[in-house]
Length: 160
Image (cartoon, rainbow, N blue to C red; front, side):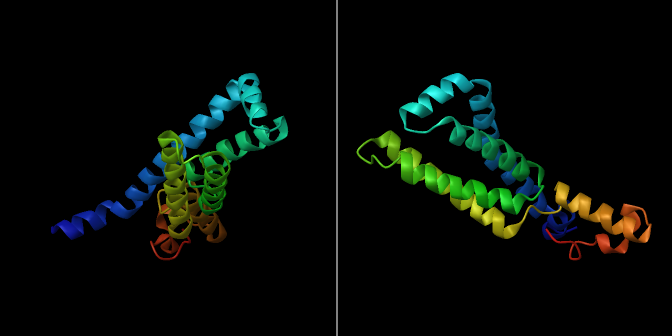
């Protein structure tokens, strides 16, 4: 077996997409949980920046909802676009004091994460995703065949 055949059997692209999705979503799920579990402190910190509780709640919902969406591969393209736009807004609203190396670093990281999210939105979540599994189950249910035996489960037939 050649290295190319071995990689094709492992479906390295899908494994890489899964790993990338998990790494990209980790920061959002973690931060969303931190904000939710320390809501009063987060609310005070956000108020100091001029951000009210409704926007804090929306931020928590976006970070947890879209973060889990990306991690699990459930409407991952939509979640990735939402988080990419969130990163662009965060960078442009909160990290523009370029005289501070720390702020510049946060600005650049937000831009990099946004770029990763937009690439994910274009590439899709791959075969190792909940969307793929659900699509296969729905397709198999339509014809009454077990999921693993249905011919439409090929790599090219289901949307990613």
